[in-house]
Length: 238
Length: 293
Ligand SMILES: Nc1ncnc2c1ncn2[C@@H]1O[C@H](COP(=O)(O)OP(=O)(O)OP(=O)(O)O)[C@@H](O)[C@H]1O
Ligand SMILES: [Mg+2]
Image 1 (tube, helix red, strand yellow):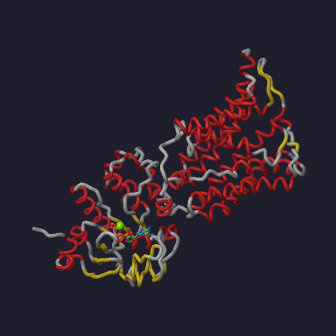
Image 2 (cartoon, chains in turn purple, cyan):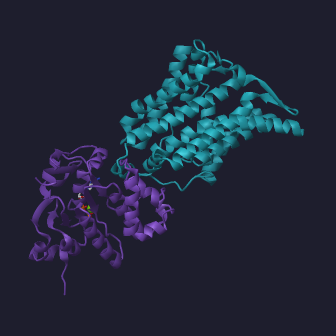
Image 3 (spheres, each protein chain N blue to C red):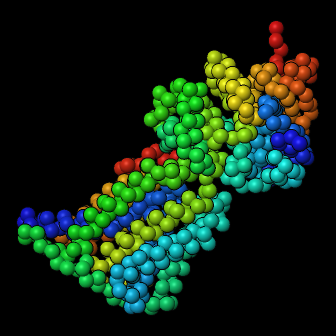
């Protein structure tokens, strides 16, 4: 049994089908990536797992439990945390508060403090600015904060929706090495990336989504060498 | 105007302002979290007046006060659950219209149940006791109102700034979906907002009606409008803003009356509203208005 099993998932927005029966698995401890063009339905998939968007039909199983159309609040309590597309930090809360609110459902005070310390270690920039209102952070800093906040939930499965969007190349590299470190901490990662090359490089498994359907899957490295994937998503490399 | 009368009027104004501030907070907090002008808030305040009248007929005032607060909180939360919650994803105009409907419903219900005739508001003896300081004299409630207001506001600000639940309230007021992703129960946070707003309105009603001695089904209308203006003046959504707005409106109203312009004093409040909306729509303490997605 996989940690997460998505079967025949349909989602539509007012009659327009965004997901047309996708199925995929996420194995415990893996980094799994979904790649695809804009509008393919990647964010919809994660939002549906998180309970923000309702499934029209199909099942999502997490640890054997059906979680499709469960309240977001319950999904988080099961150990799934989403770092949403476009950062979505709370601008009126301080950096520290944004991190603490990530741990909203946790009761283990001492471990929350310990996790806070670890996240400051991962992103020293956040510690320097812990009293600043998150709305005044730079875009890249907000992105780090969003990732840190997702980790503060101490999730078993961390879902990241384009965590490197809008970051400088050096920071993009940092984000990817942090994702690998998150995996090394024993967490499972479901990753969406525009930067397909980098994502496929670190992914144990990858799925290619095109207009609401999965058209290809395989190990990350395998898809890196796939001619169709190269042509469509990796750009021409001289 | 002699110095003593000036001080006397200041005291009256600050006292009236304190009661206004407590009511204005309810408008401001609900707007902050739902982007709704809760027109029914004024009538919740009016109903709190009736709750006191009926409670005192069976219980001593010491027990009646908590009963009134509890009853008002229940009413406020019920209104939210019945009239606003089902419209959570409806356009903003629908929920606004629902609020207007609830407001009329409460006024008509009160007329039907208690008649439109003024009912005497019970005197709470200790609140009515006259106190003299030098040449200034007033009833205890006049001194108590601003002090109690400040204490309650400090407690509220502490809750909002320093506690986990307050942090959740601030988060929900910015972004529902992301708050859900944190595991926050949006509906509980919204209910809590109505609990706080209604409880403060109940305290405000006790302080306000003790000085006015009678309640009618329309007793909420004018103070409600003034407190709404106070909330806008201070910057709707901001608790300190609502408090400052409440005190400013209370003081200006009192001084206009004292200077002989009593017929003009209500109109002044609305003139103020128009001026703020024209020149400083975000209010004194307000942040930039931003639309919630
Ligand atoms: N709230 C919504 N209402 C209506 N249509 C929507 C909504 N959200 C997404 N869609 C549509 O569903 C489709 C899939 O959108 P989705 O956001 O999942 O794409 P994506 O793969 O994440 O794209 P991108 O790479 O640009 O983020 C798109 O055609 C989009 O227009
Ligand atoms: Mg997307």
